[in-house]
Image (tube, helix red, strand yellow):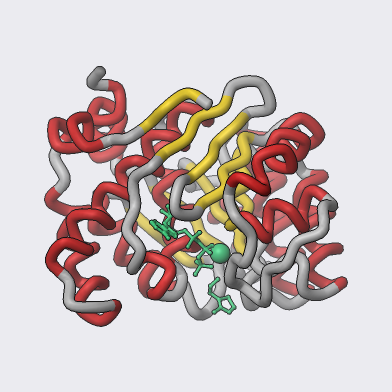
Amino acid sequence: MTEHGTRLDQMRAQAPLVHNITNYVAMNIMANVLLAAGASPAMVHAHAEVSEFAGLAQALTVNIGTADPDWVKAMEMAAQVMAEAGRPWVLDPVGVGATRFRQEACAGLVALRPTIIRGNASEILALAGTAATGRGADAADSVAAAEDAAQALAQRSGAVVAVSGPEDFVTDGQQAFRVANGHALMPRITALGCSLNGIIAAFAAVGLALPATVSALAYYGLAGEQAGARADGPGSFQPAFLDALYNMTPQALDTGAQVQAA
Ligand SMILES: Nc1ncnc2c1ncn2[C@@H]1O[C@H](COP(=O)(O)OP(=O)(O)OP(=O)(O)O)[C@@H](O)[C@H]1O
Ligand SMILES: Cc1ncsc1CCO
Ligand SMILES: [Mg+2]
């Protein structure tokens, strides 16, 4: 099987412009993750330009981590442009279980039909309307506990739904896959989930949403494994992770990807 490496190659060959409306915590690491992978990031959210900019981008990510009502409006404006152009966009429902504002913001964004929804288990449970125990932006539920919610959410929303965690779960409501790549240090660095949305968007810019998401998760998790093998802790993990994303070959990805049909 050479499909994951081929997708990585295609993504790098096209170097898609990925438009991100993300949180203040994630902006810098997310932009660096996208550059290391070979895509072209831009963080743009002002109402005065967000629609025009979305028109230039090959893919969009929106993330409510530190949003306010103006930012949510900007996300809706950009998502509308992508939907009309038939280009992919990714929703990250950060901490959606925590407050009513987050729930209402996500309900409005889900109604605009994201191509892909990516969150941790607690976020996917909360977005699907199932009781979740996550606190703030961190997961406190297992991926396995969120699989049924992910499937229901995919069927209801029309999105591919990805639940990240020790073993990621991805479904379009019909087919499902598990991706076992990753490293235990990854949740010890903030905004690696947010940054992952950009990688998923970059892959989705050059291929179909479900396989693109699976390959993006395998690539990201395998880079995490390589970085984790070198790092002494969260501090040294971060630069090693950027190096691993940058140095990953298609061959290494195909050899190391741990993807199974669920
Ligand atoms: N315990 C773990 N072991 C291995 N990989 C993990 C583990 N937890 C998370 N990951 C990986 O870390 C990446 C980020 O997923 P995570 O679920 O931590 O996102 P998140 O909670 O949304 O993060 P954030 O909100 O800080 O951006 C994914 O690639 C996932 O596979
Ligand atoms: C820590 C944090 N707080 C709001 S957004 C964010 C980044 C991880 O989701
Ligand atoms: Mg998150």
